[in-house]
Image 1 (cartoon, one colour):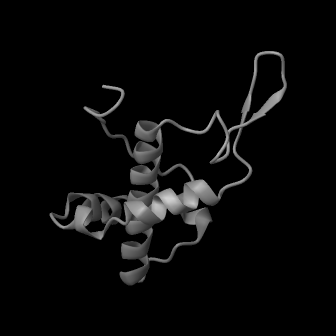
Image 2: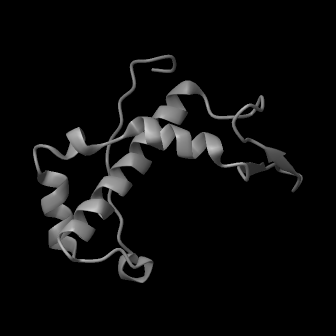
Image 3: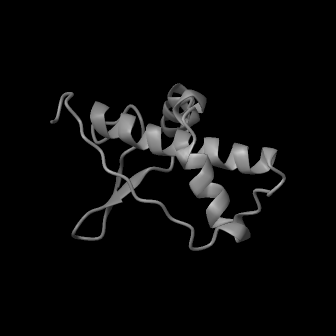
Length: 103
């Protein structure tokens, strides 16, 4: 399984398959986004609240979500399935560089 994911991530057209706008739509539709404050209270950080993600953070999270969805779709196309149990412990690391609002 790891080899298949590595192969997908190394493919030259993986970024062409990303739908970052869909990632943004998914993030903005999540009405259960909260942050736990030091005193234990919960702050609503859903889209439309003052504590929602910055534009840069939203884009970064939408990119990561779109990448995950593209990898899962490709695995499914290859007949490897997308049962969440198969992915326990599967992680990937990356590096982000932002030159936007918050460099």
